[in-house]
Image (cartoon, rainbow, N blue to C red):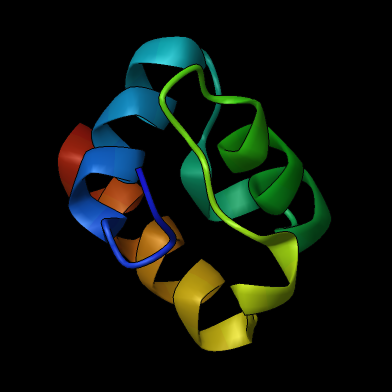
Length: 64
């Protein structure tokens, strides 16, 4: 899984952290949790604020 697979990342984060409110996650934790996902394999340097915003929004949509 790569940084561009925002929807899949959001689904896996929702499954991995069911008790977390995604609106309250800071970007440092979001990045670390994404990189810790079992299927994730991408360079941390390819991640930026826009990607993290997209992941966070997709996660919010996933649990709504």
